[in-house]
Image (cartoon, rainbow, N blue to C red; front, side, top):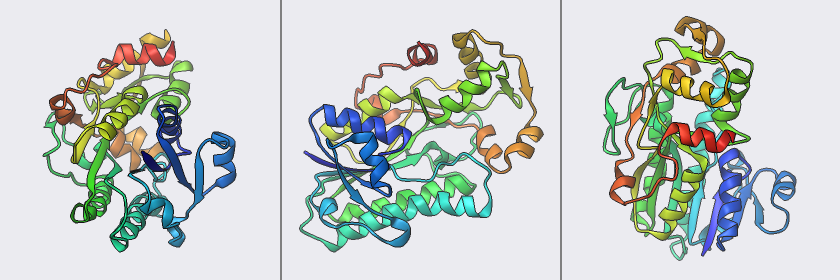
Length: 302
């Protein structure tokens, strides 16, 4: 099976590409940085230059792939200036739009599945509400960005392609993502509660994320999918388990106003509550390797 991946040089995309290559799939990637991709992947994986900002994308690797995994997108961490928010939104929507348009313009394409990244940010801040795949989109910048992002991929539903919207939670794994940022904080003994700590954090181990993608490749499914553990944690519990696993203190208390001063609008997302349930994965009988936070963190930290 020929699989095309965007965002392959990122924390998630790199590990996913490596694992799928080892499983025997024929992997190609679209990348803005050919030299970086060569350094990461060597000669095992085919690399094609693209730049959605400039509407540059090679047609042949897109239409000749059996399956596309679209993970491209600007990192959401950082101060949300007007320019940063534009990059977050456009990097996701434009990259999806260009792939969709190529497929729509070439009716003889081979693409049968289109896995498009999204995020549980789709749901917005929902306090204690349990969120399933049929729960509506929330309010706010990230929720509306995710909504538009998903809508772009849905354009392919009428062109012979099964689309899957990957509503992914906090991905935990070594060497990247939220875990790497939190690790520094806790190692210096600065971990603790954010505001009242009651907000729900829905997360997934990187190994389970990769296994879910492989599962979707091999099984029939279409539509939105919550990629989270069955057991979300309140932020206070998450912090306690993280600190205990690292054998570090968990004494800090960061008031919401301080976080807003430090991080601006992004703080609202960090303080937001998303109690997400992986209903569809459970119905599909997917077996999580790390459903509980303590075992997930022990595996990562060692």
